[in-house]
Length: 462
Image 1 (cartoon, rainbow, N blue to C red):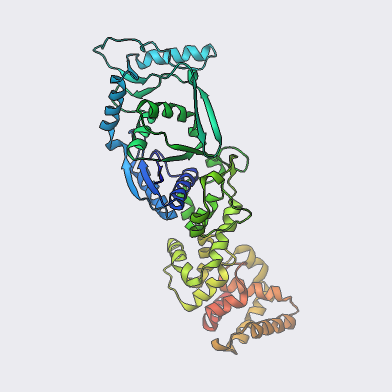
Image 2: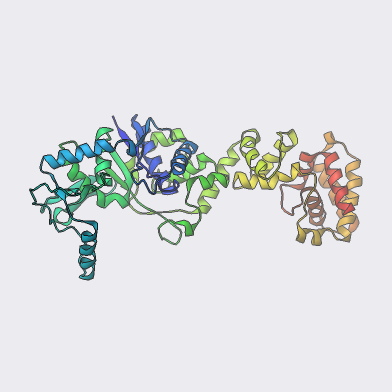
């Protein structure tokens, strides 16, 4: 059975790169009827935070990436790592290193000054005596040979064993290093495929050596390419938000984010939009490209808008409701608002934007756009508003029809020597406080004749 894992470190918020790695693992497991395991690598006690753990779990849940096992926490498995380190020590595949941190740092500085890559010189490798002083445990790396593995994305990768130093697997304070803990976990959790970012490629040969030393089967590896910003630099905060849940706060749908993330490196012909069942059926890690992907916010906006258009106003309302409440509005799913929402959703790129576009519906007191007020609440604008009041007073709610409204507005514009757009903009400003909104006749229909009249009269009084 395929068993994959997502193993974030809770030293920061779940970012889009990590979320994509989780998604690739989840899809690979689901495609192969396998298991998706969540593991929290929290051995960095000083930097790890419970808040970051919550953020990781909340982010995965938002995307719909339900794990089959876990979350497992490395901080609760420390004795197991120490046990394996001492097994390697007793078998002669590791040794005690008595070098102090100060001594190692001095050697490192000297190597850098000499232009030599800093690496441990093996000083303690052949010491047989057990000294009564603190020690770390180092793995005995082979001094020659080739370490190779077939990456599921990149093909065969080869490393010279002589370039790999004797690396620490257990620190003198009893804490395991990344290489030891991740290998022990993957063995104990029976991980068959390790799918992770390409920044881990150089870690892989060390971990292969540990697998071999422990006499276990080596999992398959797949290293996915980096995500770049539009300037082709590595994606970072300078390119905008990188924390996954910040996109939820901005009003992106999880389905759109999943679609966007999977297309950062994976493709299926020219198809752009995928339902989740379709992704599970089609996804294979071998189809992920080797080249870095570029994070384009315009692409995410387009996808999100497409997903919003597919949903009915009734489906969107509970999502938009949360954003309206953040604006201090206590909304209700009224018929008129749902009608308005059908016209807003084709214009908005995000739920937050849809809430901002439609908030006027619930406001009793509008704040008018200042530039629009100067432009459209002039003498002719107010005259047109007064004529619109007389016109609307002559019709009933059940008689609101786009053709009737357009005919009335045109007659008003002609009588005042104005263009239709000037009349429409004055009314739009009076009804919404904005110069941009869904079609003015749709706005009137959503508000109803009575409320439209109240707002226009209020504007005239102003």
